[in-house]
Length: 634
Image (cartoon, rainbow, N blue to C red; front, side):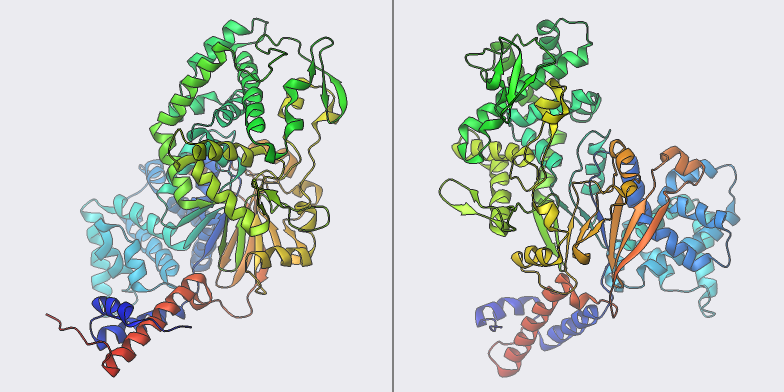
């Protein structure tokens, strides 16, 4: 490793101006390296299910219950432990529920118990790190209580007096809420969202607000996320796709209420254009679907490198007998009413459609809340992430049938594997941040749509998205969507190793972690693939998929003892959780146990700290050799 140059050491000496200052920091950093690694929590495919997600966040996939049991299994009944857990998950709501039943004695006992839980959660962190997690209003008091035991005879009176004073002055509720917040923050050091915050669930906006308030989170974009990101960037094709899904699944309230998108122009156009006996929502669905297929055709024509000309199905309709040719097969259409399609120019918008899209693009690009959420997705998100030896991404690494990485033609240069993922990440950002009105912005917007549904898109991972076929063709043979060969190859440990090596991960305990394709636990599918090298954690968080999967999702934990998977039963709802202390039933599976407890020094953070230590040692040597002079301290 090259030594830092003198100029860098001079700059470093401004922060550590003396030998003593440098030595103190070296000691502190070395101590941190030997602490147990923080807990990482992995969640995928939330699909707008805000209540279930918030509960998983609050109970840390059952870890808080585990810690409560560890402390109180022999002293509290199961019912009492469950009620304590609910109080930690939802302190304000549970306090309101218990208001008529609690007194000062209850407050004092509960505060003692919560402090014990908080102390256990804080035990593997430095006092400095814990202090940074404390709410400002109670920082000093919580810090004192965490480091003063009620069993300490010399300070027993001091400890008890703090607790009784909190109750006497009417601050017990606020203190319980503060303690619950600290417990939930300390029990998980880092949160990974492996794609798809958005889809048909009721409140993706609530989920994003929660994530924006989280102390340490990263997001690997899912195909549904990238669709909304493209819509926020002003891509007409993405906007039409978003509204196609929203109208199909009767989720327009979310679009209108959460983000203030004005759908009245679409409703009026649909009502005037389609006059059959179906309801307005069906008319809106059809109107936006036809617009979508036109705009998608325009994108494909602008980008022959996408290789998606066969998806331009409006141009393959034979209006004489109302059939369409898909993949060389002619199918009958189940709908013959297409007043806005000109057979000679099937991808041209009518003036009415163009006006609707202009208004919708304005609404999406001017939605303050949507833009705030999408900027967060860009700033905290990426197409993939390597973190502590694991490779995280939502969909797939595009591959060919012979097991090689698929080469995508970028218009003169072919990219595959990691290079393709880096290119796709950069082009997605270009679609949002490049100057409006430029070719770069248009290309980026188009690529955001491609990432949503493109044949070789790493976020989609199928041969086609059969939206047109499912809507207008009854013959299900036309609906078939072939998965990318990647999904077959991750069953092979050797191929998993090849993928990990492509991203520079060759360690024994490296894994691929991805979601996107629900694990059908009902049919015996397992989330662990490739001899333990790949983990698929999409188990059906979204209610719409739970009939297929048989469970309500997988989450994953990676702490100092190793990796374990958690499968969850469906969530009965927030009201039931608070009133009946109903938790999500979770089942743990120990997946990959470390031979020795993993320390901070073995993590990415630890490696960065070690580089800091190396620099400080170099500064120390420079001080002692007179290359850099100690600074005078006032």
